[in-house]
Structure formats: structure tokens, C-alpha cells
Image (cartoon, rainbow, N blue to C red; front, side, top):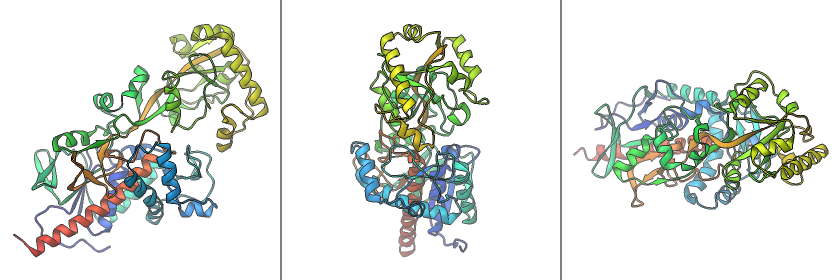
Length: 490
């Protein structure tokens, strides 16, 4: 691409992008590809945001990867599934755009150099196409080198396109004049542009904002831990309140179900043993223990907010060494603290759990019988195991001592309260009208991410799709604004 021309305007840049996570990088690259002079601002001392910490998994429809593997899909099919799973409580127009653009996003990323091989993947960490949750067809696209790889490819494109990057630059406010956005305020100084993209991330790192906008996080109490990037401080909320902008998605976010003693994402914490049973406060089995994280917090909510996970000593001893949380010795340490319960018999364990012993014993006996046959006719967990390439014939829960630990929605990954956007990523005011010159992407954008997390990769795809669209739209506005200035310098 040729160097941007040096035309004189009243602005410092054509487009200013706030936040250099996945959404902001995609927006800056997209805007620069459209010929805009772009400034990318990042409050932290490094780029990447929460995208860099993720598996990089992308949910997308009608892609060349799907086609190569014989998966028939369409944006319309993805839209219907997405809307139905969220009870049509998200905004149909922006969701339709998201589904349609997801296909183009994957091809764009492949052109930039992201590697997503046309092969079957059995997890979010193996490159290829995977079953990533509750989608009706496989839409989980796993890139090589995970979220870090995505960020590196996008950043190389940013550098090639001569996008200016300023680290350690936290935006304090918008510049709004004559009813339109004219730039941003940094350390009391203005940086001007006719178009601004807010891609500053979510609000998970601000405890007070979490209490306000995601009260379900309080269920976990002291067990709650945050895996979002530290820059997820909810800067978009203050901007919304100062400028009369609408917020959408209050009360929604992604809370993964974890054991009470966990403090790390599963990459570090490890995984619970396969031979475990989840029972409610009545001592009865209540769910597929491998239910996708899109729906498992909702299941827990129906059972009082949390459930018990019960396993035996053989299962404990089978845990692979080297993980921070799910480790055989660590379980015994948590027993000593009273966080994990331990008893020689199921009946004694039930008493410690304060559930009916007959219910727990019957549930475990039923569990053992089902998985000896390899078919879970109660909750269909054998299908979840098969999708992971795991043998559905599980070892019985039969060797004492027995253990129980509370499973809670305790891992806060992302929040869904963002600036309400339309199908062009334009930010809407509380009066329903778009504020000229302002766009939003990623967790700072509200209207698409709903109560139900639609398949693994929902938030990363959302960030990159909206970032790409917002950058394109912002560049178009800047071009139109520049044309007006040339025609009428006054």
C-alpha cells in the first residue's frame, strides 16, 4: 500500500482507535486498508488485551475452512441459532451483521497470515475446526498460536500499514463539538479526528463496575477470580454517562464454572477428573458434567447458584501432575483447609454436604451403571465426551475416600455491558440516535453479546468482526468529512 497522502485537514488523524486488543487492532488495520491515517491508543504498556490471553477461538459461519471439511453452514442459519439461544433479547440487526461478517472475517484473517488449518480439532487449543459449545454445526475456528498468534498477525499488518501506536495512553474523554465526535482527550490534551472507535475492552477488572453491571458474579463470593486483561477497566461506561450514550447488556457476561479452590484459567489450573458427578443441593445428579460453558452457569443458577462435584480417590490419584489447582496433592491440601470435603463412605460424605445420603448413593450408583455402558441416557454426557474424542466409558466412583467440592460460576472471563451499537457499529445515544463519528467494538460494544455465550469463540469473533467493520465505517466517515473540508474550507 502506498504511503498516506499529506493532505491538510483540521484534524490530527482521520481515525483514532482507543484500545489495542483484538478489536482495536482489527479496527486500525481495517481503517488503514481503507486509506485512513490512523492513531491507535493503548492504556497499558503492551498490546493484545484479553484477546492475547485467549485461545483465539473464533465462531464463524460459511467459511472456507468449514467448506473444506464438508460442513454446510450459512449466516442465516447462524443468526437463527444465535437469536434463539439468547431468547431474541439481543439486537437482531447487529447480530445479523455479525453473522454475515463472520465469514468475511475468517477469510480476511487468512489473507493477513493467520493459520487455521482445514482439519478436525478436538479442543480449543488444537488448530482447526472444532465443536466449540452449543452451536448447531461446528463453527469453532482455532488459529495456530492461539490468541497470541492472532494479535501478532494483526500487529504486523498494523506496522506495514503505518498505523501510529501510542502505548501507555489512556483516553480520559471524548471531544464532542457541534453534536459530533471530534477526537479524544489524553492527559488534558486533545488528539483530533472526525471518527473515533472505542475498543477499550470490558469492565471485569473494576470490582465496583462488576458489582453494578454483573451482579451474578457475587454468587462466587471470595472464590471469584478474573482472567480478563488488566486494562478491562470499563472506561466506556464513564464516557457513556458523560455523553448520554446508551448501554446494552447489563447483567450479562461470561462466568465459567470452576471448583471453589481454583484461582487460574484451566491452562494453568488443569482439569477435574472425568469420573465425577455433579449433584444439586438435594443430592441428585443435575447436569452433564461437561456441559458447555455457554449454558453451565445457567444450569447452576437453577440449582441455587452452585452444585457439588463428587469424585473418589482413584479419580484424585489419576490427575496429571504439574497443574496449579487440579493436582492430587493440592486436593489434600484443600481438604486440610476445609474447602474440599472428604469421607470414607458416600453416606458420610452426604452428611458433610448436608444432602440426603440415599439421594447421593442412588445418584452415584446410577452414574456408575450408565458410564459402564458408555451411554448417559439421563444427560447425554457421552455425546459431550465423544465430541472431545474422549471414551464415554468412565471408571466407577467407588473407591474411598470420597471427595466433594463446590462448583461455582467463579471465573470471570468477559463482560457484555457495552455502548449500544447499530448494525454499522455506530454508537447510539439514550435517545436512540447515533452520535456522529463514534463507533464501538469488542466488549466496549453492546447489543450482540447476550446472556448466553454462543459457542466458544463468541467474544473473540465479536471483537474482530466489529473491529473490522468499525474501522471500515470510521474510515468512510473520515473520507466524507475530508471531502467536505476540501469543498468548503470555512
